[in-house]
Length: 291
Image 1 (cartoon, rainbow, N blue to C red):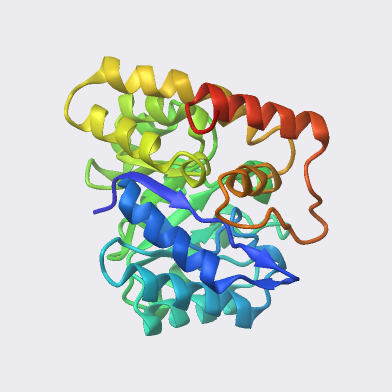
Image 2: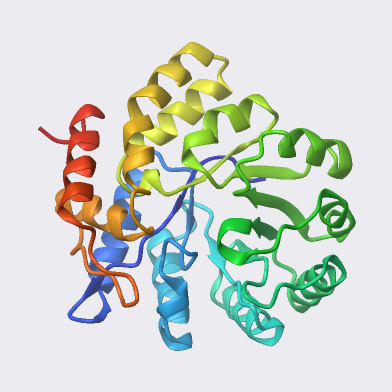
């Protein structure tokens, strides 16, 4: 259903507000560059510091700009089940193609709590639902057994896996079936994830190098493993540099270096320090993204 290089879109700001023009221009650029899908208002989109109105605005702007040319998987996660349901219902109402729902952060629900949360969001709309499992941010890890139980629900179609555990796609395929869509949530392991049965990556790096990220996925899909590895190696310094400080501060700086948005982030995030900026610049040069 979903595959390839799916960008975890940044949310451009200017003077403290959403820069709608820059955001929609980014969508056009991604379509031109071969990106396979769009994820607005995830963690990379600074969803924790967007108001509900801003969250909805970003989804609407991206759906409008995509105009059916790429699938839009709208972030609809919250540590409040009622709020996640509200965001999911809005995504369905404005024409998103699917929702991405993160494991509830800070609350630390049990596996039974995770199942109940995701089932409640699932039951609220008919949109395909992708589970976002990211223990490093949410401090809870959905077990393979819990995921398998959720995969039996009609509209739970896949997972964005940011565990960095390369055994997971193998174990998940055995438990959930080969049709369950598995997308890496870690650029540095994106190629290895494909080799273990994944279908693509919801990518931070694709904000900066959309064509290269899509070409790597396309190379793998047509059986060119060595070509995919060559691209992945060239992007590896960038994968690392974009996480030298808390994302999305480095990636917004990188996109600003391409002239596509301001580097602004919202507190409590702050702009990256000079050494990080230098590392990002050097990685972009090495990837052939700028001179």
